[in-house]
Length: 388
Image (cartoon, rainbow, N blue to C red; front, side):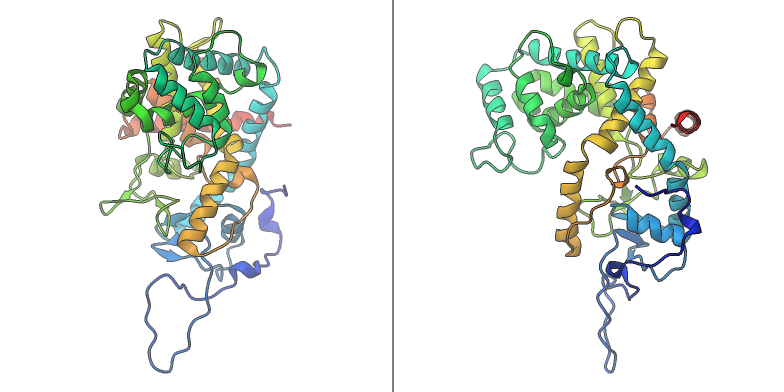
C-alpha cells in the first residue's frame, strides 16, 4: 500500500468514478429549460445528508473519500476535514498494532497468544457446561456447516445473524458439540473470534438455550457502544442511504477533541467480547487472564486481539456487507480498498469498548471516555515509536 502519511505532497487527479457533478440524492426538482444534471455516483461520504462532491480541492479529504470504504454522514465540511486529518495521522500506528498482533500470534509465548488461547478455552467451556437440548445443538451444528443460503436453515435463517462471520462458522460448529481435548494451534489463535461469535449466536438463539440467554443478557447489561441516533432515528452504515451519523455520540466527540481517529463510534463489538469473556470466566470460576498475566497486560492484549479481529480478520465479510449496501442503496458496483481501510472501528474505539466495559462504566460517562481515549492515544504513540 502506498505511503498514506505523505499523500498531501502529491498532485490529486480525481478518479473518473467520482467526477464532480450535482448531488442526485437531495431531491431537487428540475424546472422548464433546465438540463438534467449528470449522475454522480454516491461516494460513501455525505455532508448533512447530501452526497459529497469531490469538486472540492482538499487533497487529503479526497484521498480519505477515495481510499476508504465507508458510508458515513458528516455534519459539515470542517467535520469531514478533521476526521480525514486524524485518520491519516494515526493510520500508520494502527497498522503497526495490527501487524504486531499478527506477529505475536505466531509466538506461543507472547501475551496475545496466551490470552487468545485462554479466551478460546473459556468460550469452549460455556458449551461444555451447557445444559441445552442435545437436539438443538445437533441442529445448530448442522446449520453452521451448511451454506448460509441453504433453504433448510431454520435457526440461522435470514440476515439477523450477520455478526457470525463466515470464517467463524466451522469453528463454532466444533464448539457446540462441547468436545473435550486440546485445541489446535489455529483454534487457539481465534479466542477473539470465539468471543465475538458466541455473542452473535446468543443474540439470535437465546430463546433456545439458557447458556446463550445468559451470555446475551450479561453483554446487553454491560455494553458500551456508540450513539448513532439522529432526530429519533438510528442511522447505520449498511442500511441508511447516507450512512452512520455520529454527531450525538459522546465517544466520537471526545475522540474528535483529542485528535483521535473515528470510524463507526465506540465499539460495541469490543465491549461484547470483553463482557463475554468475563461472563465465561465467572461462570466457570476462573480468571479472565491466563496464569502469570496481570490485568493491565491482559487488557492491552485483549484490545490488540479485538482490534486485529475488527480490522484484519473479518474484512471479507465486511466487504460483502458494503458491496450489498452499495448495490441496494446507491446502485453501485463493489469498491475495493486495502482491508485496513474498510470502515469498522478505529483503535481508540476498540480501546474504549474494552476498557470501559471492564471498568463497569457507562457510555455516557464523559470522564471515563476521556480516560480510555487518552489510554488509546498513549498506545498509538507507543506503536508509532516501535514500528518497524
